[in-house]
Image (cartoon, rainbow, N blue to C red; front, side, top):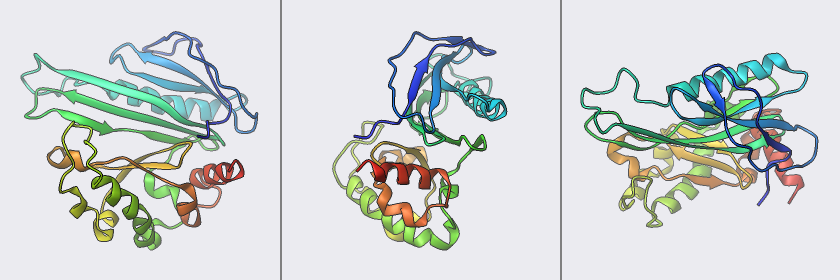
Length: 248
């Protein structure tokens, strides 16, 4: 398993609406693309997400942390919850999937019940930032020309997703994924939207499905080599894929 290079987890001063969390272990690595990361707890929601320190790049640091602050603040039922919130809950699990190569990729999964008809068992709210610009990177922007290459990219994803959907593994809801394979044709995958993280093993993708079929929303990891040909040159996927290939 390839660990993200130079992830330094420390505890720094609190930001507005947030408090510090206990020190976490530090992982050292090469200096290139190093990202200093700290964990911050949002006082209003209880969510714990990372924030970054980028030496010499205060504006990019501000943009990334503002985005993470906004995400943290949203991880709650809030005022718009349903009328019956006696048993409401909102639980978020977050971890840094990649913090190197001028990329920050954060895995964020929430489960919640906010007084609606059904609970949401796994909302994948993961986010990736390009630390050369401070911008968050949607799935489609990983690629050179997603519209033109959609069918080819879907073909790469489909093989792994189809296999995972038929593996018998339980979905995040704790329900079996029986019958899900029928959804994962090449045409079906091409029409899907995805949440993702960049990890040490590859691109982890998860379809964004409504509650009624959420058990079919399997999260699978696609090797970088399978997607590198379609990556936007100089973009986050290309940089992480190229760095990964040098370690193999």
